[in-house]
Image (cartoon, rainbow, N blue to C red; front, top):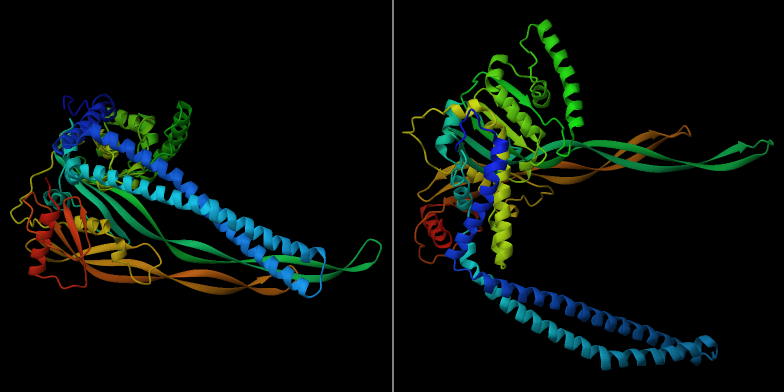
Length: 603
């Protein structure tokens, strides 16, 4: 990177250099993969055109086939109804009736079935048979060319994996570098030297994780599924009716009916599940500083007036805070750059000296540029600092933080695969870069280097974070409690290590839903009290335990043919194998390793 840390502007650098690089290198990567897989683009394009013509023709013929079948069914029904009229007419005649109904019933009962059955057996049956035969023929031809075209991309699809995304990011002209798997060295730096305490609760589960470096400082990026109990209001109603005697203006009395809908509520906790991202970055700069900031609420389609209004409003609030801090003997002062101070709004910062050391005029300028940008994600990020640990969370990355190669296994059209592959690479890096951008905006962070950690006693096993993400990538139905009525939170715990894999216990936390009825007395305007029933749901916690073995994929020659009956799933460069309550031993570990070597390769 030509820019020095003291001059680096992450927003301008992405727009001016990285954006074009990302597009070019993503195309280069998929083109190289296609060449290595001997993909014939012209032949694939022609075959794709034929497939889509067959699909269009199949849809057209299928509509006609369904229409003829429907008409045939309607005529059969009409014939049966008409026969019922015929029987009615015969019965009426036998009773001596010679009226219009009996005659009309006889006529309809004879004419309608005759016409309906004639149409069915002389016209519709032939059309149904012809369209069915044509449909079958078209489907066979479609399947033949589809299978051939899909198989022509088999070698390409086999090469797709998470490693490609890492290679793609690492070849960009950027100080952002990723690891093929979570680097335990970086985790140890974050935990042992920077005091990271990443203890997620039983209500949080990691669904994706990877590590990397920003310059000379480590980061972890996680996607976390979280459960929260929120109160839900259940409503019950009862309509009450009564009569009253009233007197009109002339003194006459009369009885009137009145009614009222009585309403009762029951509030009960309900589990709510959502996903959020968390980027954890370690840096020794400003080691005593703590603060939090949240998105300002500025929309990406804002105008200058929106920014000015927000800045003016918050500047007044900041000035009041500064006055109160003086009276309380605290050290909070307003920055000269009131636009940055108002937009960033880290009002709980606890070290003014280090805050200014970190957010130099250039850092403030960079940050304002990020927060007010209209052609990126804008101000959608949370930024918290706890001494040497920084946390970034954003709205845009809550939907996913990884490049997921698995959907491409279903592609037969190379042009579609290439287009979507390029878009996925671009979007994945775009999401990562603008999560890191608030950190890249701070020059002091790029000048500071992480210390070297003594790694002699390093235990290079599969991390619990990756194991948990691997488990979440598997079919979640494997772990469900039989009585569960909700989503699950999957938590893993290391059980033991084997030569080729690590064994983890999986705890599935979910809830059973039990219907309840609560009767609540409610006063009515007639002076009486009535019971109103409210139907509500009580969620009862469930726990289901099982086991999963997680093994690493290695770049070695495939092993001999071996079968494994346990469900398994690839995640990044790992494979998870569901064991349930099966006892895992060394012999099964060897079988699992051979299976991985046969079916997966880093290539």
